[in-house]
Image (cartoon, rainbow, N blue to C red; front, side):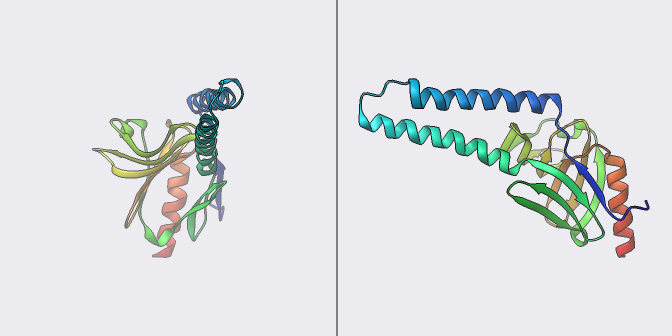
Length: 174
């Protein structure tokens, strides 16, 4: 590992692409229907339509804002870049990092977040992993990162290489 930094974009799986396109088209259609084609004879109905349209648009913008864009690691931290700021995990807090198979997510349910719209984002829970925060756009290549307080699951195109890169940096810190 000669590189001082690991950097890789999050690649979208076909499923995430399909769900995002389907949800995006449906959301856009619903907003257009609410605003232009729904006949509102009462003035209060106009405000209701606008409020519902704003909730739909706000949800889409929120999901896009927390979508992971790039995974970075260096000698200090792991960073997940997002449109709405970056998630940073200091190496000093990491207790374990390792690749995991998709089967580790079996039985998971989402407690808050997105289940495919712009990726699998948010808080999830299952019997095997307990509570965890996931930023994944491809469930076939996953890395688990445990800290003193939290567990994270990320997608990564080369999970073994990423895990080894971080473990090497952790050994140098000791």
